[in-house]
Amino acid sequence: SFTMFSACHVACNIRLALVVKTWTVPTTLIVLISLLSYWVFSAVFCNMSPSFVTVMYDVGNRVFGMPVYWLCIIIVNAMAMLPSTIQLFASRIWYATESQQAAVWERLIVKMLFRAQLKAWVEGAHIAANKVLPDPNPGNGTIPSGANSSPHSKPAGT
Image (cartoon, helix red, strand yellow):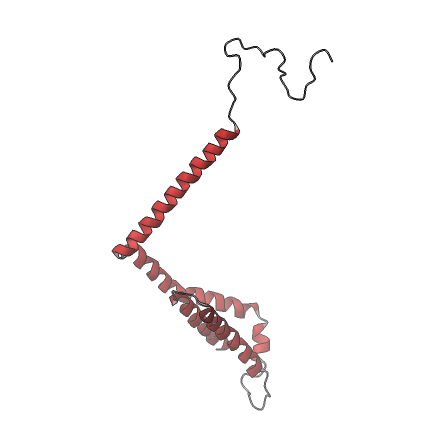
């Protein structure tokens, strides 16, 4: 029961986090404090005197160290959030309002334009990096006198 109550507490906080549209510092702190205060309170409450808390004594110490407890919280919350997440995405895809559809198309167009600009920039940089200088003596195919084939080679006769 302690594991399921912990999973329910985490599920409520995750659902709250998914519903919030504008995140501010107080909103973030409230969610984090809610999660942390539950586990701190549980640890303190489960370690009280056995005469005061007979059923819950030492449950926190045993449960917090078990990987099954944490895995159960993760799996239960993933399964609990699945229907609302599917409903949210389905409503955005199939039942979107005109303004939502326009926003999706706008993001898609901006993304396509950005990719096109990036591709043009990369191709332009590639062409500029590999640009071949025009031949100073077109037609005869020989290197003009005084010109070396390599900038590091020594002039002839030295």
